[in-house]
Amino acid sequence: MFDLFRSRDKAVRILLGGLLLMVAFSMLIYLIPGAGMPTTGNKAEVVAEIGKDTLTTQEVQQIIQDKVRSRQVPPEMMQFLVPQIIDQAIADRALVYEAKRMGFEVSDADVAYTIRSIPSLASLPPDQYRNTVESMGQTVPQFEANVRNNAYALRLQDLALAGVVVTPQEVEQEFNHVNEKIKLDYISFDPAKMKNDVKPTPQDLQTYFTHMKNTFNVPETRTFGLVVIDPDRVAATMDVSDTALHQYYDSHRDQFRTPERVKVRHILLMTQGKPKADVDKLKAKADDLLKQIKGGADFADLAKKNSDDPGSKGTGGELGWIVRGQTVKNFENTAFSLKPGEISPVITTEYGFHILQLEEKQDARLQSFDEVKPQLLAEIKKGGLNDRVQNLADQARAEIAKAPANAEQIANKLGLTYVKVDKARSGAPLPIVGGDKAVSDTVFSAKKGEVTPVMQAGNRLAIAVIDQITPPRPAEFSEVEAQVRDGYINSEVAKLVTDKSKEAADMLKSNGGDLKAVAKKFGLEVKTTDFFNRQGAAEGIGSASYFTDFFSKPAGTVIGAVNVGTQTVVAKVADKQAPDPAKLAQERQRIVLELKDKKTSERNQLFQDSIMSKLTAEHKIKIHKDVINRIVQSFRT
Image (cartoon, rainbow, N blue to C red; front, side):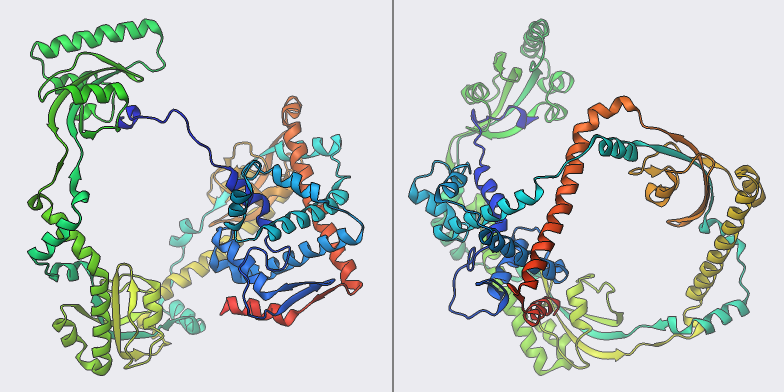
């Protein structure tokens, strides 16, 4: 609640122009050679030739970097998306080429008009315009060429998309498709409830183990020494002299100056958004509370019972220390005019009526050395801690590499932590460093007797000395008996579910859809869902996508056995609910826009494909697959 009456700026500046600029032209960075990236002297390979234009590996790398930097695509996904990114870059170039070949023209006036329509560039003087463009990684000529090329591509696409029409029949069909609903009667075969029906004998388990023996293995384990460099432990051993502390204090005095401040508590009676009649009553209440305080009533108790500030009323109105500029003006002026222990009159702010009590007041001052000594010590240690930790890690790694058998003694000498890890499995959490995947991968890729490089594990560093590697092997029955039992039971339950659900579905089809009779035979309960549409979910079952085909079927249709998540259901369509025609009018515009967007996307893709096919057939496009394969492979490795 304290934030509620902190000072506000009268005007809020909205800085969206730059963002709009980046969104509007992010697709253009690769439409001309070298755009959006610094030029280098390196000769790039050609990915594709479009007429006399080329797309180079350098440009492709820049496109990919831009997508990762703008977080359009996570880095780990790039290996799968690189081929599509390259295809789109070639298609964009092809559209520009075809538009020019067909005689479309984009004048300098067209380019200027487009640039002036961008709010962040509209009224900039030449030097600021150049700086803004260059901040995007482009020169002004490159940027303006991008704008021109984008205009060429858009004119060609506009021609192809001009005939996109959504008919009233399509709107009505889509409205019905989205809004028609069904409800289901169903019975459910839950594997979890059938496990008790399976009673395996020792022979059953032994037979299952023999048949599935290749699936039961003891994974590779490793025994190793782990040396951990913990920054907290290192910091505790760092010694800083008083001389160093005084030197730091003297050179950073401004950092330890505190402005004038007051410690205050208050009672707030909120008036914001309340009618005048209530405001008058609240003023009378505030006057009465002030009278009680001056008569000896406890300020904190009255604040707990009466204040409308939820952030401070629980602590008796306590706000703690505040400085100038932290609260609205009238509150600030009153707080800083009071003397310690003094009670203010009822004051008014934008939020309501306040009564203040000043608890303490401190003038602006320089904190003494003794006051800030703990802070000084922490800051100095923090400043040198990273170097100290890294130096210790490097020293430990160098010494251990010379004498791996002495890793524990070396760790103890340097004040580091040593842990013996016995028979660890890949991916399992390790002592102190936890389940860090990078550490596990490094440890399990090292050879016996090898000392790993220094590894980062959260805020700690670690070094491992591999003592023993036990290779994976087929498991003995006694080692995996519990897993064998679980595997056997799960496989038998799956068979039971399949057999019983099929039998139930066949019975339902043959008895005229009498689901109650089927349920009775199998000891199950008939359940009924609420009505749901294609985008919804069948209550108690799962996504409506499992039943898409049955929205067009009449009530009474037997669905049969359907695997949904962990259960298998046998169901029938219990009822159907047609859409309300009265709602079509209010949804019409949304449906028209969605259908038009869908048609536009489909036609645009067909149009691009046709341009690519045409230019390829005319030998105007030449794609270098070997270069693309090398780019893709570089991301996979």
